[in-house]
Structures are given as C-alpha cells and as structure tokens.
Amino acid sequence: MTVPRRYAKALLTLGKEDGNYKAYGEGLQGFALLLEREPELKDALLNPIYGREDRRKLLLRMVKLLQMSPLLGNLLKLLFDKHRLGAVAGVSQAYQQLVDELEKVSRAKV
Image (tube, rainbow, N blue to C red; front, side):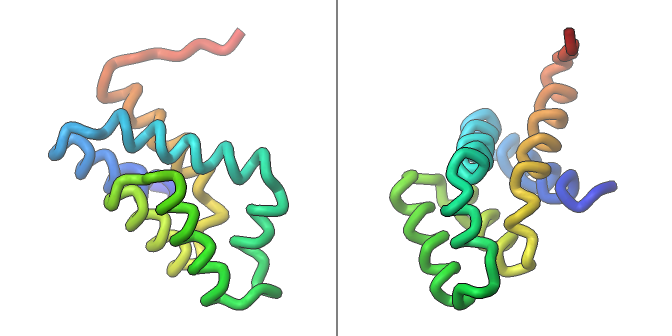
C-alpha cells in the first residue's frame, strides 16, 4: 500500500464513522487544487528555505481561513509534520479512489 493510500484510508475510516467522508474528500481535493493553482503558496509551504515554524503557521492560517474541519486540518498538520505535505494531491486521488470503491462507482477515461 502506498503512503498516500494509507493516509487516505485512515481518513475514510474516520469519515465513515462520523458520516462526513464526502465533505472530507471535497476539502482535501480543494486544498490539493489550491496548491496546484498557486505555485507560490505551494513553495511557501514546502520549501525548506523558509523556516519550519513559519511554514507551519501558514498552514494553520490556511486551515482556519478555508474553514476546514478539525479532522482534515489535523491530517494536513500530520502530513506537514511527517514531511509529506507535498503528497497531498496523491492522498486526494487515493481518497477519491477509495470513495469510488465504497460507493461502487466506476470511472471511465475517454
């Protein structure tokens, strides 16, 4: 099992327990897309040239401004603390695949 899939599976397990798994997927995807669309923001969060505490504070501000759920915010903080925030897009993709499996959805590429 890949690292992103492990995080995605843990989030989905908790999301199924509290019934918010769809909202978590949307929030995770939105955060991943934001980093993709805003390379300067991604750089500010991931580039070690900026101090670790400053980058963590930026992440916490983003979580608050985006009004993320505490669970999703904790996942992002964990990814940051484990030096894996750069894998958030992979976690988002793995999460969507797991949700599709759960809901028995099959996606086709044209």
